[in-house]
Amino acid sequence: MARPNGFFDRLLHWFVHAEAERREILLGSLLLLFIMLGGTIGYRIIEGWTWIEAFYMTFITLTTIGFSEVRPLSEAGRLFTVFVALAGIGTVAFIATRMVQFILSNTAIRDRYLRRKLRAMQDHFIVCGYGRVGRRIVEDLIQAGRPVVVIERAEEELEELRAAHLVFVAGDAEEEETLRRAGIDRARALILALADDSANVFVTLLARELNPNVFILARTNDHKNMRKLLRAGANKVIAPSEVGADRMAQVVLRPHVDAFMERVLGTGALGLQMEEIRVEPGAPLAGKTLAESNFRRHYNAIVVAIVNGQTGEIRYNPGADARLQAGDILIVLGIPEAIEKLQREGCRAP
Image (cartoon, rainbow, N blue to C red; front, side, top):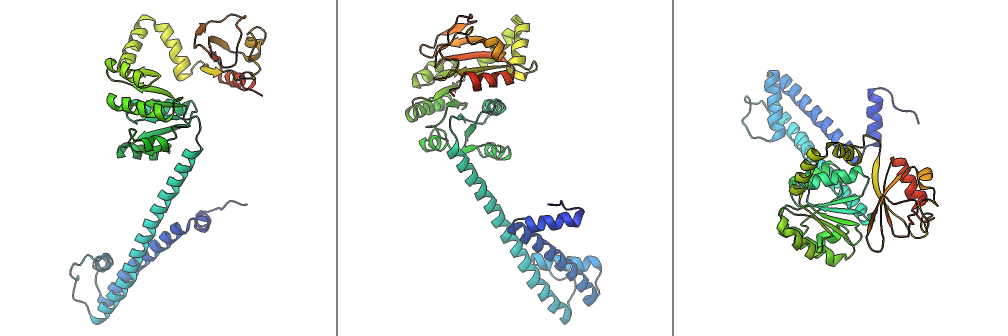
């Protein structure tokens, strides 16, 4: 199909393929412009007014402002005013109606799309709270290519989520229905970034009841509340202020180590990526040692550690005789292509 050339060709192409509401709004706006122009010319000819007077009279007639006439009208002028009012006010009402319908239609389509996308999500991450901490978490998850659902109730943050085209649930995370709408029963992890520690404790209790297997990462502003969150069912609790302080200390004590880890885990400037990959049952690597699988040569990645799938024990810098079992988790370092190959060909069941 040939692409339209020229302004009028592109305009005609847009008009033919545009939604009905858009076409009607455009036609109504053109008609209103024509009525404004015709009214101005009509008053100029009939009453002999200046262009400004004629335009002003047309404007106050169409907008029904109710100001007095510019000058006393003749009989012909009064009849012409009736015609302008009937045509113009009806056109304005038509445009306003179509614009409201168009806005409501777009909102309904967006809401249906959001609900459909939510229902299709599996093994996703739910982030409660889109404040300073939650926003950064969402950015990192999206950059890593993970599916994310945000729970937020503040209208300002909701507008930002809409503008960013992110999947979200508008509501209070402390309500069971809100967590269910976010797919807590199908979620891989729940990240609590709410500013209030008591709210994080309550949501942890509720989420653990709805999904006993979900991984819960909770934020706390007070170190003394860590134990409460862990008792409530959180798998991991982090105090952002303490993490920031620890990071600052590491920069001073081990600047080169910190620079290396920042490049690997943050910017990826070295082209490297650190990832954790679970060995599935029946995968080619299950039951083999690193030497038997020719790991370094075949996958071109470094195994930093192996997490035992049964006990959770971590074995750092494993030797060539380390045997991998189904359920073990590999902490590997390598270029993204090598890690993708390892996940696809080595750790996934055929």
